[in-house]
Length: 149
Ligand code: 5GP
Ligand code: ZN
Image (cartoon, rainbow, N blue to C red; front, side, top):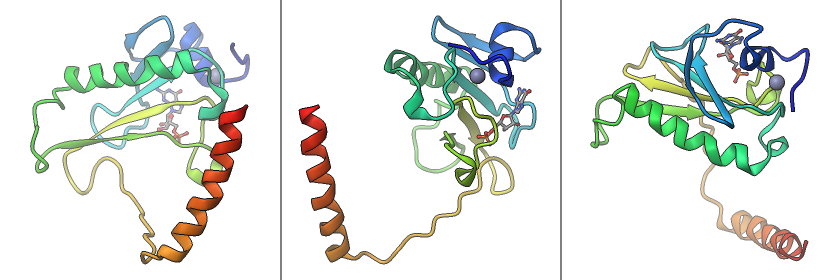
């Protein structure tokens, strides 16, 4: 499925140029045009869905192996210690969550310094087991219904 007005659908179809990387039956990847770090890549399903839940599973199942392959191509797989060079995988859904292009995309962003790559705001709350237990109970009810569908 494709959208005539979507910039990433146009990239997949070759109507807009891109710096293509790995391409499979389900997935297309290319360099981000306004990178936050060198080698900032985008990996997208060849299916027009604005948010993750809009994309069929077979497309989603193909994406992470492509991301993993790119980590190898970029040499990001050589550091098996917690320190030193790392990387972030980012997938935004909705304006409030910083999504600008309404076609699902996974960012693969090398993190080599504090000043490049992804910066993260993380408003962690104090641990509150009463609240957590309530939320858990609510979710278990929803999951039980979901399993019956
Ligand atoms: P979002 O904020 O929606 O998660 O990220 C959208 C990303 O798409 C941005 O990092 C932006 O630089 C990238 N982008 C937007 N338009 C184009 C384009 O025409 N070509 C490429 N290669 N990247 C684009
Ligand atoms: Zn699209």
